[in-house]
Length: 238
Image (cartoon, one colour):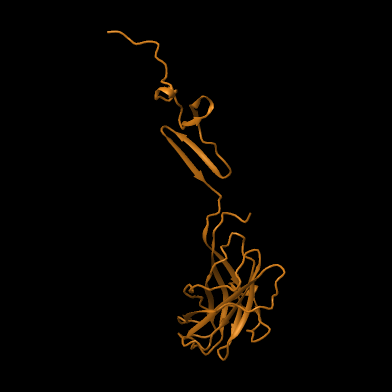
């Protein structure tokens, strides 16, 4: 027998690649110069790491905002009673010295009372519906129900703030026993914000709905805060 000599890498024009050796992570990439295939590797970018392995390329992403459901916590201390039919002013309630104090808004059982807060949503918000949970506590020990509602309206640059809120959505909850226990409601159904827009201020009005059949508690309901759920459809606010 003998050996064959003088053989070179088969050219692209002849059905080959024109390449005969590779390092980890190299890929064949089309090259218009000479209509050939060139060897190349993937270049890492901002927040992207590339790891070249034997027959493999691993891409890792870090520090990047993920689109989808997001939350905003709004404590009662960031709210104010409305000028008409407002709840009680923010109150500091001591549990036990050296333990957490509560900053709460008290809502009567005799009539609907309201508080207001505002949010400037990020530009990545999809300007769609939101949902919410209310966090609250009670002043007495019982198992009666409490119902809170939320409604909102967005106001853009140059528009009047003297505008009606959107349709309110109400969520029911109930005392579970002991005064000063923290209660967290279920997540509401979708709240449609009137004139919803990003790059705006969205005003929210939260209220105790004493006419709701579930709201049977005879004492004040103490609102601790509201968690808002909203959806983004962009990776940043550019």
